[in-house]
Length: 294
Image 1: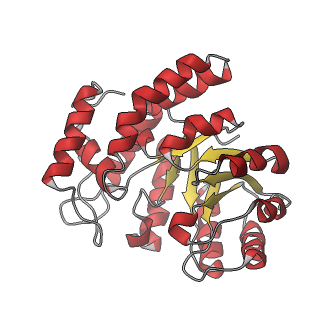
Image 2: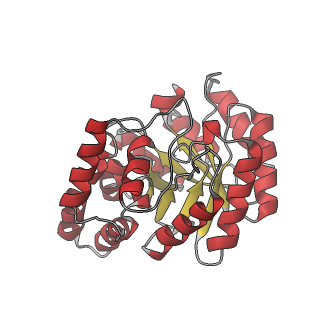
C-alpha cells in the first residue's frame, strides 16, 4: 500500500521564478511530519505543465532524499505522449521513487483501446506501482469501468485516483477491479471511504494532512460520526481551495501560513485581493495561523 493520505505537494518558486528546492524540502518535511503518508510530486498542484523535465527530476530526487525513508514518493510522470511518459517513468524509477501517478493522455483524446495500450507501454518501464489518474473534466476522456477492468489486469497498476463525483463508478472500481481507490478531489475523500476507498491524493494535505489522516482512521475504526464531523470541519478549507484554479489558492494559503512558497508561473496568476481575503478568513476561522500548525 502506498498510503492513505498522499499530498499533492506544491512546487515553491523563488522571487525570480526558479524552483526553490530548499523550500520544497522544508515543506515536504512539514507535510510528512504532520500526518501525510506520502507525496505526489510534480503533478498539477505542483504546476507540472510549467516544469521542465530536469526540474521534475530534481524534485523527485529531493523528495526521495528528504523523506523517502519514512514516506512514499510518487512521481507524476504522465503526459499526452506515451514515449515521453515512458522516459520520465524510467528516469524516476532510477531515482528511487516508490511509484508513479499517470494521468489519462490528454488533448489527443485516445479511444479506450489506445488508453489501454498507453498504460501497458508505460507499465513496461518499471516494476513499481502505477496509480491511474482519471480526471475527465481536465482531459475530456473518462476511463469507463469496462476499460478500468482491462487496466486492472496490468500487473503494476495498483490504484486509481478518481476525480469524478460518480459514486457508482467509484464503487465499481472497488468491487470489480481490486484496485485501491483514491479520491482525486478533496471533497470526495469521505464519500469514497463510504464506498470502500482507501484515501485521497489531496491538495488540502498541504495544509491539514493530520486531520485528513484522522478522518480516515476514525472511519476505518467504525466511528463514522467522528469521521463525518471532521469532514464537515474541513469543508470550508476544501471550498476555499476551490475559490479559483488550483494551485492558486493553496499557494496563497501556504504563504499566509509562513511557508513562503512564492508565486506561480504563467499562465497561472496570483490570487486576487478578494480571493486572498477569503482564504485568510477561512484559515483564521479554522485556527490556522502563522507559524503554521496542522
